[in-house]
Image 1: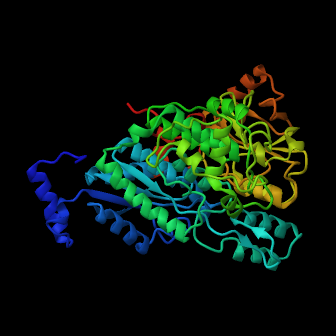
Image 2: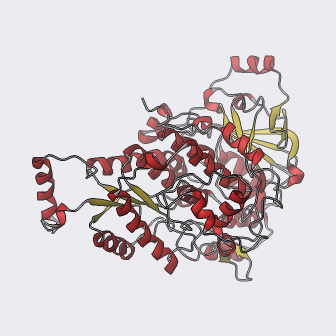
Image 3: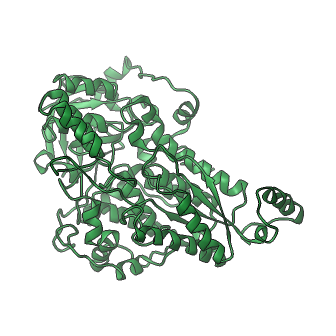
Length: 555
């Protein structure tokens, strides 16, 4: 057994199991936790229903285990977007990691299948699993079908925000706007674009926790159900052979995730989640790691928001995650020896086929020579700032303009809806960082309004907040140090000239160090109210440069 029991403590536990109808013989089996985030407020997690759980329990029982379901939190960013609730979504990652740690260790589980799909929950569960270090596999929820307007045009969740801005502006009718709202999300599953959910599900797979093709398989399909059964069987194999997360993870494992993410234009939120997760496993992934790999690994695949029409359905049909890995492996751009619960990265490459070179390019003929993210430096983000340049019009890779400063996304959003922000402006949204908000909500709503007005390459955003993985346009986030901690972002004034050069990796404002020092003499931070968990998060979390987590230091 993985856990050590004495006779008294084991008998005491079993007495309580008998109360729930578990037989004396079944209580002798290793208990495998099905740590489930199913709930009725999250379509990405909705597929993890009782029928699926029953399938997985049956597979585990056949192999000698006893699977018991243990529910924990499973939040959806989209549910609370553009509300005060969004301040909780990033802190929820660390809370979820604590829940996994608690249910696994309190119940002395012998192994786990952790089940999640959405943005913060996947990395949170993996952070907890790494700390617990018992045999663990992950099963993710698969992607939802893309939506379509009544006229047949492809839409996704993020199009609702763009449509709202267009409706307010008067370029579409209310009926057209509501048509988008009604049809953007037709089925359960993860949003079908290369957002944070898809990036994180791919991370689980590249790290070796999830079955091959899990992240690029349609939710609730027969193939998806078979992958769930495979996950159940594999956790019993891991238990029998005592294979723990610490046995498969390495520095190379995490660098492989970054390589994959650069090849697919993954979410900027990766720069929060991958470093935070790697830290739990005693490895270091930094913004500098991302930037170095970005210069080495080309962009091979673009689906929405990096491409106007391709979605996860197109990516899946082209060969999905495995096909990208195969192309990277063929060019020596990924470590094929990296281990996983389901074999090596080399095994994943060997079983894959690239079926559409328009959707998944080769390394010899990439979309861009560099990866889809860039880390910027300068006198605004003296530690770092992040841009998903694969979602930026190349014409805007070099941009300059006067600053317009706002201390909240709400203020900036109302300003652009009223046409107070115009082409050529560099919008500064500050005090939305990990400590400033607190919670670092995403700035998707503002950028969706920019795109909805057709200004995606004509207005820049610079913020200490973060973005949805579906955010497009010239959006620079994660500015660190953040405004709340006295970073230069707090000291920029309306009219200061801001200069952005993505290819040169620079982000500067035309303000001297002497002038910054003078302005700081009279500066006082904007302190936004926080109670309970948010107050604790503000006190304990690190900067965005170091994962925005309360679990950075393990001592």
